[in-house]
Length: 212
Ligand code: AMP
Image 1: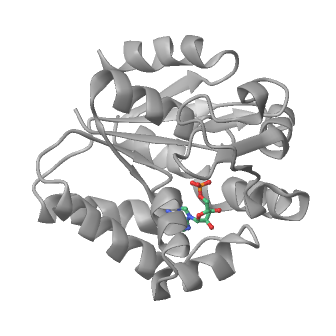
Image 2: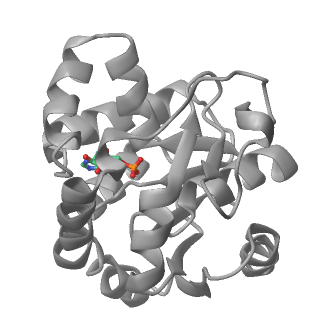
């Protein structure tokens, strides 16, 4: 089954996606990761995306939708998780069209619910490995000895958009643009709301249960 994982920034979409990839061998499509890869590669798309991302704003829909279309074509018929897309109702409508184009469907839209107060704590303490993308937290899950537990790299960094000004904007963008997707997928009878609080393994048990 193909699924969509959505929720506020810091709700744990990336972490749960990584577990789904590792344990259920699903294909992960993260628009945030695709933009970060483009930035690292210093492509034209990357430069454009960075100017929005650093401020915590959404990259324009047309650019994002074209990127997802290419990715959906590239992955063939593998089961996929869409993480971070759609981010607003216009993107959700575009996704419906894209899925028809490639003859695919979304089985469920999983919404990870985490209270606002926890989100700020999660985002401001989040750190990433620049080499492999593994996700850490300064207090809840620090990398052992300052090195990535997954690949051993010492290049652990904080995303520019996890700094305070951008966090505020991202949470506002979420409230205004992304939260309405709950109603969109509820109307389509695809919405499953999950408690995203607590340890990642506990949340993963709920994610797996929702897929069965
Ligand atoms: P994420 O890694 O999902 O938290 O995304 C990081 C940033 O990438 C967001 O704050 C946006 O600037 C941009 N981004 C990711 N996904 C989308 C999307 N579907 N539409 C527009 N911008 C996006």
